[in-house]
Image (cartoon, rainbow, N blue to C red):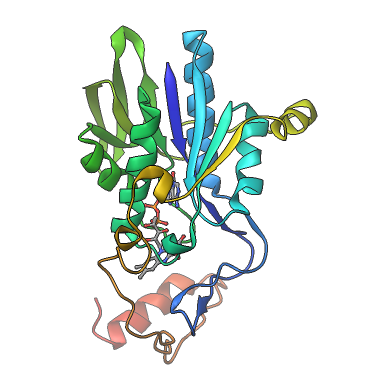
Length: 259
Ligand SMILES: Cc1cc2nc3c(=O)[nH]c(=O)nc-3n(C[C@H](O)[C@H](O)[C@H](O)COP(=O)(O)OP(=O)(O)OC[C@H]3O[C@@H](n4cnc5c(N)ncnc54)[C@H](O)[C@@H]3O)c2cc1C
């Protein structure tokens, strides 16, 4: 079984997210790492391969060339190789353009399963997988909390606001896993050492037959017109709970006719 896992390099979780006032895009300077949510997808892929007893796990990403360093974490966990689409003309790609490029890279791989994390911690879109599935004309199951690959199809338990859905789909399929699905393994020292030697391919848009006008700002359908600080929160009240906290809170709400 061939499993492709889409992974993204994101700014480190620690610092507050910043926007660059010049480019009107997320400020991606500073320390970066592999999107935490994607580690659940890598772990899912490794378990699928282990259960099947055979197969290949390929990490696929679009990003700057330095993103290969972050992708090595997935290789250290056990993925077999990495493919990074990196091209100056892809800078500024929105969801539409990103999905176009990733779909082309995935078509080239012809995987049985395409895995995604639930969201990227910088964009927080939680939508890219559906756009890619649409382009690949594959079924998609998102927010997967449990997965079963027996019988040549995928059967998944999908988390919803009101409980769970049970969904089955034929392969090939796009699967976006929730962070509740597993506990990602840590790369072992041996894994980290081996990661450097595993195949790591970089592709340009031309390699994929994607025109420069289909990616980056030119291929995007959204524009950011302005940035501004969020409005101030106005008057705030801190209620210390000395035993009468609930009463004070209720008085506050009643006073403002909120209850
Ligand atoms: C005008 C505009 C300009 C933008 N410019 C840039 C830019 O220059 N650089 C940039 O990174 N983003 C840019 N973005 C954000 C861009 O839309 C997102 O990076 C992209 O669409 C993915 O969406 P997301 O991060 O919300 O992913 P989500 O939908 O939240 O991610 C879900 C899953 O998709 C996968 N995934 C997400 N992104 C990638 C990727 N790049 N490669 C492989 N797998 C991925 C991961 O598995 C992730 O868990 C821009 C957005 C707009 C509106």
